Length: 321
Image (cartoon, rainbow, N blue to C red):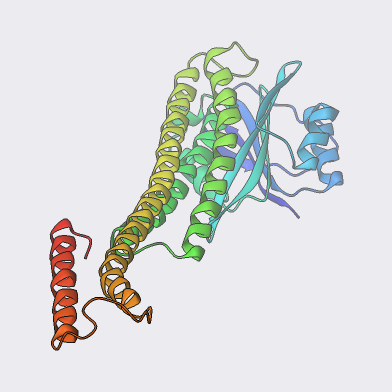
């Protein structure tokens, strides 16, 4: 069975378990059902459709498991899709949670999510006063739970990028490290594309008049919207850090290449002196001046040494050597 939990809540307290079937459930005042499923089968969704009069299009979307974050209205019910995320190494893996919200029921359908809702359910059950507000408060709890899972992802990736930034200050980035930065950058860009629709979903829940969402719960959704904006700001900052790390590596590489070029140019200039002098006296012409000078060889060597020394000192002062 893919049903993780199925309970009836009365006045904010868990009253009894709700079995799945094809018979509609009658709720009394102050009661609502909260059912959680993971990768349900078509038969299970058919049972829920009959029990809570779910819209067939919403049921089809929930079975598909490949929806973008959205809020759909079907009569007096809401269908909300949110994206979950978790890290697998340095890759951000995504899941999906589809939520059916009615006046007396909330059904969550998870696909590919690494975090179960059991911890959230226990946390809400410890606050009967808040849980008494109904399914819309549980909807807020689930979305807040999903958004809270975003922050650790960015913090981990940020730590990894800062490690590379420290490495740049010591030595140049290796090709594999550069490819690693670009891989993480692609992950962050894709993650930012998820944050936009998620912000729209929470914005609608916090500002629009929607069925099953009481105005007393809307301030809670505004708080979640602030969390999403905070995560989005951190993602933008992380992208800037990645860009700066790559640019710093390029600048240091250019600086190193410039230093090497200056050194080569300086030594080439120094070696050009003996090369030029030796080239002139290696022409083998018969009537060349100073060929018969007794100390000419030593004088030429002294001139070469003097000129090379002068050039070496000048280049050393200029910082080329």
